[in-house]
Each structure stands twice: as structure tokens, then as C-alpha cells.
Image: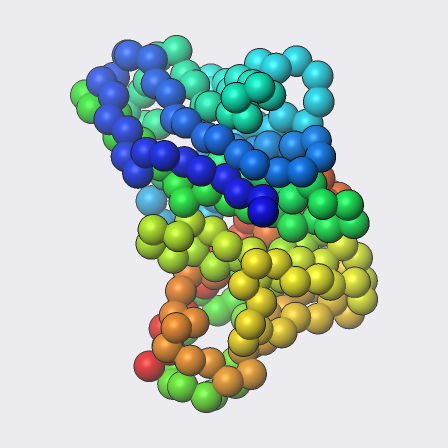
Length: 115
Length: 112
């Protein structure tokens, strides 16, 4: 079965420190991987995606993610966290089953950046 | 402005009273989708549509219906809502089925 796991419900990091939000996945075929962010009382916004190419993907607001095929991971990273990065982050993967365009989202990780 | 709009934004209703949540996008996107967001469960896909008149089930389609008669609109229909459908609902669209999705502002539904 296709699945996405975000093992941490919450991640706390001090402002200025690097941050990592973890995501692992299980899909058949080649994975299409995405990160989205949800600010309080807002809809979701796209951050970055991996479809093919370089394993290190750069996205919006200084975020990047590393695709690791052997570990089936797609961790979100940022070198220096800002208080304004505090939000709920979702990892998502497109179901690789042929002929389907379903998406599976993780349960979300709340990032709290402390001043 | 490129956007996905949903209406209503908030709705309180009673068990069994049919309702429709509308979704519209102005980006000429082929792919549209509905999700529900529940605490601890993240987002779960209800239905999606690859094109006009082409729809398919997501992971949690029970109790919902959709239609795609026009490219820009993708309404979500609850024929007989029940309290377990109380949730935050998001509509989304993307150019194709493998692109990043643009999300609407959400509809908070309470079924009493």
C-alpha cells in the first residue's frame, strides 16, 4: 500500500539554527514528492517538489529537500530557521499505481521556531 | 488573480440535510481534487478529477459525490451528511495530475 510517514508531530528549533522535517514514503513506481506548508487559519501553499533529476531540490522561502531513493526519504531542510517559518508542514506523494492520480499526504509536522 | 475559491467558508448543518460545497478555479487547470483535514490524520483525498466528466475516488470517498461538468468547477456534494463528516475541507487544482496543487481557503463544516 502507498503511504507517507511524518514521524514527528512537532519539531522545535531555535531561530537561526538549521531545521529538518522528516518524511518517508512507500509507493510503487517512481515517486512524485511534494512539500506543502499551512500557516494558521490559511490554506496550504506549495513549497517544493521532486519528480526527477537532482536529488537536492530547492524551493520557496529558502527551503530545500533531499530525495534519498535507498532510504525512501524526502526530508525538508532549511539552513537557518526564522520565527515566521512556524507552521504545519505536510509531505505528499502521488500514488505510483499506473492510471491513478491519487495523492497521499502525511499527518503533518508542526514546526515551532523559538526566538 | 490566480486562485481557487470555495463557498461557503463556514457551514453548520444537521444530519441528513443535503449540502453542496462549491469549488472554482480560474487557472484553466485540468486536475481538481477535494481533501478533508482532520486532527492527527492530516489531509485525506476524497475525490479527484483529471478532466471534464472524468472523476475518480481518493482514499475516503464514502458519503460524498462530485461532478465535473465544466473545467473550472468541481462541487462536493454530501447527500446525507453525518456527524463524522464534520471536518475542514479543501479544494485544490493543478495544471496536470503530477504538478503542484493550488489550494482553496478551506470550508469548515460542522454536522450536528
